[in-house]
Image (cartoon, rainbow over all chains, first blue to last red; front, side, top):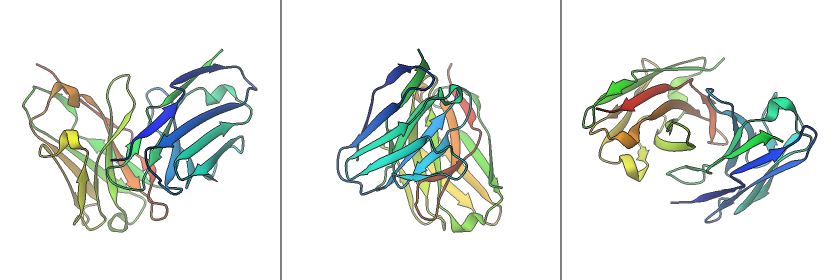
Length: 107
Length: 119
């Protein structure tokens, strides 16, 4: 099975900060990676697909990059509504696996 | 608009069985693979199981193999998860999730149904 190591597990940031979250795959997964945002009590919402493509309707301050084993989600200027937990998902092979999540909290 | 609505969760004793259902609408159900994903209280997301669009191919995370069975009825736009020999560690919100065509990640989620395994 492919392991996804996501870091950091949590971070504190201020409105306007640039935030970077990383996912590392235990083996190459091409660009078969998506990023999701989840708010408390809600289902996850897709932000990025195929590692770097922005989901329709998602603000352009979100961006993704990477290929192979290392991937990054960047929020260029953190907004109040971005405080949430973020997950990566590899869909290169079954069983699919999520990263452990990154909780973005208000500083 | 894609809609996924789960049902069937509840409180069940260890060793018991439960069947989750998910009714889909807003897309041609038979064209897309489907997944179940769960989230234990206060924990992260865990992919549980997947089924191909025809139902002919299934896959499970190791922790549920031999206990859970995923299935679908394309004529009814329904996805199921039969859960047997339930354990306390199966306690979670279970999400029904639609897989995209290309890429084949999860592009839509249901609101989830809570399964609590406790005596």
